[in-house]
Image (cartoon, rainbow, N blue to C red):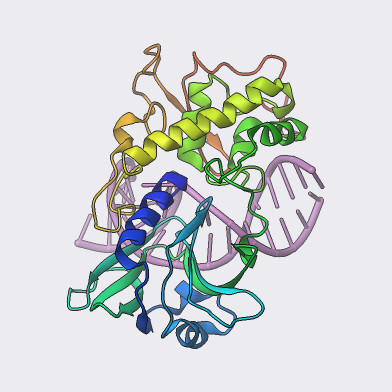
Length: 298
DNA sequence: CTGACAACCTGACAGC
DNA sequence: TGCTGTCAGGTTGTCA
C-alpha cells in the first residue's frame, strides 16, 4: 500500500497531532507488530513509556519519531516505523472503540491514543537509535527525491551503471527510495518507456528525466492525499486519498490509455504486476521477448 | 552485481 | 454454503 506520498501524508498528519506529546503507556496487542525489537514487546514498552514524541521524520517509506533523549551519549533514541503493505496510524480518543487490526496502543498525555493498525503485519514498530539523523536500520536506504539536496544527476549515473531494467531500478530502494509499484508504473507511462527497458540504454538526460518525472508524480499524489484503493490506506484522520482518480495505468487494465485510447494491459512482473499502454510503451528494440525455458520443446 | 524465490501475514474475491 | 486458488500498496535474506 503505502509508498512515499502515502507515508508523507501520514507523517504530516501525525506532525500536527502528536508532536511534543508524551507517551504515558504502551500496550502491544500483537507481538508480531514489534518483532524487529530485539528485546520483544516488553523491551519495546519499557523504552517508549515516558518519552516524548518529536516531530516525525521520513526517508523513502520509513517514518520515525525522535524521542526526547537528552543526556544520551551514543545517539538519539527514535520510534521507527514501516507500514509494510497495510500499516496505518490513527489518533483517537482513548475512550473510542478500538478498531479491527489494531496492534499497538500508545497512550498520550492529552488523553488521546496513537494507534498502530496493520492487517497483514508486514509492517512494524521498533525503538532504534539514530546516528547523523538517520536510524541505523535504514542507513542502507538511499535518499528519496524529496530529501533536501537530492542528487538527481548522481542517481541517473548510478541507474545507467546498473545492468538491470528500468522498473527494477525504480523499485530498488538503495538507488532512490520511496518509489513502489504504483508510482513506478505511472512514471514509466509518463516517460513512455517499457518496464523491461535496459537501464544502460538511457542517456544521462533521460535518466535524470525519469527521476524528475517520478518526483512530479509523487508530488501530485501528495497534493491528493495519496492513493487509496480501499480501507488499507487512509490518513491519520481516517479520510481516503484520492489520487486513484488521476492514475493513468495502475490498476486500469482494459481501460483506455488517457493519451492514445489504447487499452491498458497488465503483465506479470516479479510475482506482481506491471501496467502499461502497449502503444505508448513499446517493447525495447533488440531485447528478446522471453527466454525459452531450458529443455522446452522447440 | 544481478536475479529468482521464499518468507513474513490477512482478507477479499472468483470460481467451482 | 463452503472449499480452493489467486491476488494485493513491501522488505529481507538466501541461493545460484
